[in-house]
Length: 429
Image (cartoon, rainbow, N blue to C red; front, top):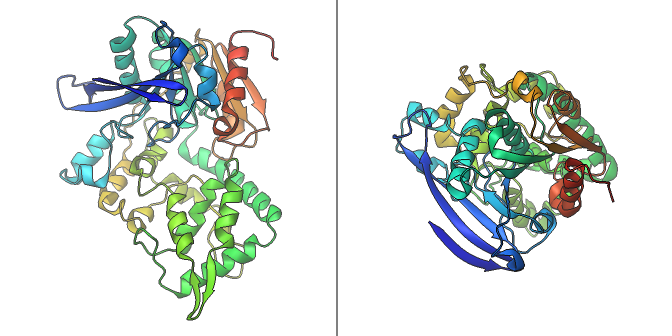
C-alpha cells in the first residue's frame, strides 16, 4: 500500500509491508512494517538510489521531518530517503501494554523476542526486494541504528552499496556488564560537567528531591514522582542542548503559592515529555538484549550499579543523574510498563539470544563503511567503538569531540556530507 504526500521541500510516499513476525515460520503470524519514502520535488521522477535510515533506540519510530533540512537535506541531493519504522515502533505494528494484553506472560516474551536487530535487518532485506529487487541500496544508522548497520553488514552485505554510522558502533564481543561498567563512568563525567556548568543546579535538584521525598507528588501521567525517576533525567545530559533543557526544567521545578511550596505543574508535564519509558516500552523491554549473544543480561545495569554507590542518593551526599540504563523498578513505577513486568523479567533472564556478529565475516567486509565516532559520547563507549572499527574490513572512521551523541540531529547535513566524502575517497572540503 502506498500513499503520496507533499511536505515543505519534499515529496513523500507512505509504504506498508506485511512481513513475517518470525522468519523461521514465514507462513505464520505477520506484522506490518511502515516506511516513509522522501524525494526532493526536482528529483521525484528520477530513478535515484535509496538510502535507508535506521533510527536509534531500540523502540523508537523513525524521525518525522517537517521540512527539508539536516542530514535529510544532504541525502536528498542524490538519494531517495527511506525512513524505516523498525518493527514494533511508529506505524509498524506498534508494541504497547495495550497491544500485548491479550497474551500470557510467556506469549508476550516470545513475541517480543522477535524485535531485535536480526529481524529488523530481515525486514529491511524483504522491503528492499519488494521495492527495488536486486538493486543494492545505501544505509545510515544513528546510535542503535548503527548496531543495525553492523548487523546488516554481517547478515546481508549483498544488499548494500555503502553504509554510514553515527554514534553507534557496538562492541562485537563485550558483555552488557562490561558496557555498563564503562558507561557508568561516562555518566559520572557528564554529571561532573553538568554541575560544574550550572553552579546552583545541585541545590535545585536536592531541594526537589527532598520535597518529593516528603510529599506525594504525582506526575501529569498519574505516577508518583520518585527520586529514582528524577535521576533518569540524566539520559538527556549526554545530548547536545540536553544539559540546558534539564537545567531550565529544574530552575522552575518548585514554586511558592499561598498554601506553601509545591512542584510546578509545568515541571510535572515537561518531565514526562523528557522520558520515553511510558510511550516507547520496547526501549525498556529490549535495551539490554542488544548486548546479549548466547547469554542473559540479568538486569545488567541494575547489578553493575552496585559498583557505583554514589548513584544511590541520600540527602547527605551529592545528587547524581543516571543515564541510558534500565532498572527492574521501572516496571513498578511507570504505569505503561507495569503490565509488562513479568515479560520484562523473562526477557532479562533469557540466555539463548542468538549471536549477533561473526568476527570472521565482518573482517572480510567489502562494503564501504564510514562512521562518526564521538569521543565524548555518554551512550556508546569510544574505546569499544574503536576496538570494533579495527576489526571490520573496509571501515573508515572520523573521531571527533565536536559533537555529543545526537550530533546528527544538530548538524546532520555537515556530518553526513563528511561521511559521504570519507566513504568515497574524496578530498575533504
